[in-house]
Every structure is written in C-alpha cells, then in structure tokens.
Image (cartoon, rainbow, N blue to C red):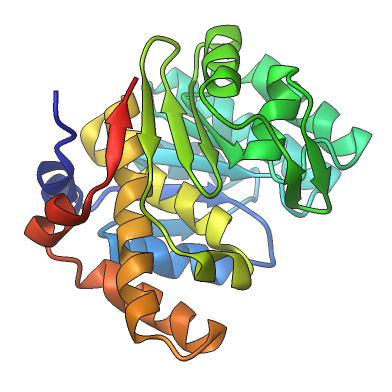
Length: 264
C-alpha cells in the first residue's frame, strides 16, 4: 500500500487539530509555529488546574521532556492520564534519554503511568529505550541502532508506534517498518527540529488517527519541507525561516512526488 501523504496533508489542513503540548522552554515557540504552519492549532499549557479541560478539547497531546522539572513531570502524567480517559493520542518525545539517569527514569515513569500512542526520538534515544545500546550526549544522538531493529523492538515492548529520526528515519507499529529517506543536513544546524517533528506528528495523528502511516506522513511532510527550504537557504538562519514557509505552502502533489520511502 502506498503512503497517502497528500490525503493526510489535506485532512490535517481541513480538520485543523488542536495539539496540546507540554514541551521544553527552549523550543516551545518553534513548536507552536510549526504546528500552525503544518495545519494544526497549538496550545502550550502545563498548569495542572488547566490541563483536564484543555486536554478534553485536544485532538492529540505531545509530551516533551527536553527541560525537565518535577512540576512539569507531574503535569505530563496528569495530561497523559486525562488523554487516555478520552482516547486522545499521546506522543512522547524522550529528549536526552540515556544522557542522564534522571531523564531515562522519567521517560519510563511516563511510559509506565500513561498509555503512549507514539514514541518519537533520535536514533540514540530510541536505542536506549529499546535496550539496544545507543549513546546520547546532551540531547544529541552520538550513536544509535541503525536499521529496523530498535523501532521494532521498542514498539513490541511498549505497544506504541515508534519513530527513530536521523539521516534515515524509521517508523514501526511492531509489524511493518517504514524507512523514510527525505530530509536535509540543514536540519542538524538548527536547535529544536526534532521537537518540531513531534508537533507535526501530533497534527497528523490528531487528524488522521494513530497509525504508522500517519506518523510516517507527518515526518515526511516536515522533511520534504526541509528539502525545499534548503534549496533556498543561505545558512541556518534563513533555513529556519524558510522551513516554516515551506511546510505552510507545501503542495500536496509535490509532497507525493518528492516522497522517498520503503516499506519493510
């Protein structure tokens, strides 16, 4: 079956899903803006008194552990439980897992208390959670498990759809794996592009349902926009601006033409 990226892009833009984020303070504005440009509607609240009502309005919830503190961890678990009660998908971005014990323990604390629909991390983070080795320095992957093994293993272990991002991206539901080959090296020159991908995934699963195909389409739409932005960029600063422009103006037919993937 071919990946229906144009159909899913159209659904996101038509439905304009509300994506509730509890994310890190380094990239929160970028995540909000990429969500809007991809076709969604962002909300960024981590106040416990606000969470139950806000989650009830959302189409997806994104939890990002990039800048941890005890208050926001509690808020993430509360938001995840509220989403579970309403059958709203939860996306976990385990930023920096493997770099410190605290981060690794926090990721598993969330996974043990919340039914997470999608886990999205770089290759090092996913390898650490899958028990396949992996090395993370700060929030960057130093080494990870290339290929399908880690995403398959972690998906089977947790029941979540798992996405591993890097030079090549892998998405698995524990049965099949999408191997995604779009993207550009400029993505590594701007802080927060991984966080932004999680926001776009939130848009796609919020509008199209929790499937490996929807996750693959969200990642691919972002990466195709990056390719287009890189063609016009003069450096990291102009690339970032053009990335927002490119995903906002991405033509559905061009996305389908540029899509580069395999299914295993």
